[in-house]
Length: 175
Length: 125
Image (cartoon, rainbow over all chains, first blue to last red; front, side):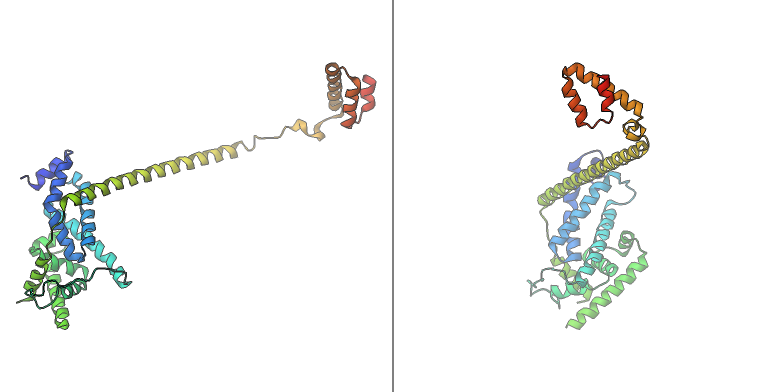
């Protein structure tokens, strides 16, 4: 199987099949990242579309200075930031029509329902939400998160710490 | 169980797969649609620029030529001298008589046009 750089190189030489292969390789990862951000499959798919459309354009000029995965996550985070910025106003105006999340797994090994967790995560500030999701759900080291979101490692740690504390407080109030 | 672990468990339950073929079809359709829209937009902009340019040029040409567009001064009665009028009617009378061979029709024509110097015309005829 070809690695990312080889696929990008082929794409830069005019092979659209190489781009499609790259999409197939990362689509699930990107889609699941956005599912965790949006809690809405349709929005997640739209955001994933936007990300790959952007990549289709920008990879033509990709200079292999950064790791592709880091670059991909940077594009993801930008898209997520834009989405969260837009949604803040929609939620404030109560235009958000996210479907209600039903706890379809009552035997889950957790003290809260999924909906409660999503609600708590949705209330976190933008940076804290992204850092918590990347750290907890994607299992990423602080260092990688820092390079992706363009902040220092200590800032990432602080945001993570505040985010988790906020979640504890919110979820603690629910019980 | 600590909170990170519980969140991790809940998030890991959310992992879903997407139909890559359908996703790629939609991706390429959207991309082509965007390219078409972009082409339409740039075509529209360039056409608007051309129309604007032609409009500006036409307007400039018109305003430049405006001072040159003048009425034909010789048609104004105040510039026509009595001699000029007389000469014109003389020539007209000769032409009409030669072409119609009917002196009375020519006379009637001059009568209808209220020619002031009927006497002169009559005397010349």
